[in-house]
Length: 209
Image 1 (cartoon, rainbow, N blue to C red):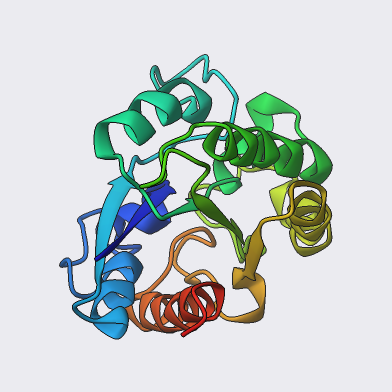
Image 2: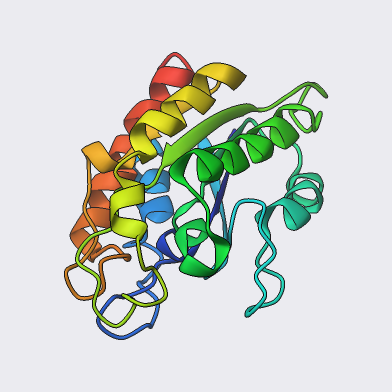
């Protein structure tokens, strides 16, 4: 049995664009991932709305992904794979972060996971870095994410750079899914399915399946 930790934000949590409620477990992309991988894998969802990579939010407390990652890795060990799916919240206007800054923040999390010694043999777990899709048409979140649309177009290139730097796997969600037109940030159910299926294919490749 291989254990996978999905460390993400509201798009891993399963935020419904139309209502702010949560998609059912079997609709959320980690649930799709688990279904596609089958009985030889256990998938752990560790998702928090508003979570950033390494940034303290002056408006919302306890959103810094760096602060909780190490305790999370320790509490769920042993881990065969950590999927880091963060970054879009770093583009909130109050952080003044570029796509390069965001990707480097994600790289800090990759490094923490790789140095954690939480694999079954006490070594580093494998890491898969997921680049968020570009921000879509912003509506009620337009002021909060002012400028994010243009910056997010660089996500794929910058996350690829970071994945190469740390020698981890990369899943470019921008090649697979697009955010809902209702808010430009969150994924609809069909996009969760596509992302989960693609993640499963990538995981199987990483484990030689």
